[in-house]
Image (tube, rainbow, N blue to C red):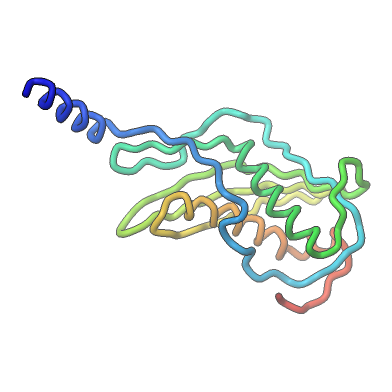
Length: 176
């Protein structure tokens, strides 16, 4: 009987004190939202310029804490970008004359009602010096899906930017 009370007490303390989670978004959770259709035979270098490899707290809920490494999150944004650019004929190389330097600068998730809403800020610098920050927002009943969507939508915002599209190559106005 004594061990049963100890087990119940330990379980209750675990629930009350919460758990710590580490999360990296999944690049393949969602298809990219609609962007202007374009094609280019150019090559491009995609570079992760997020210097920090520290874990940052991006969400708390009911005693649980979620941490993420913004360098790893930037790798996910690059993976999504690479997938979309190669679909449009671009070659991704390590030493191209054209480049996109990318960094997820921040990530946070809020909870309320029956779900979560994640926000990320993606900084992009083109090889010709154009710099802009893009925001992504992702609502979902699941925290991980919310984070996945926010990263995807930041990349979507980047690939809708006229200056980015002009830098990448010829653009037409069709939407996929």
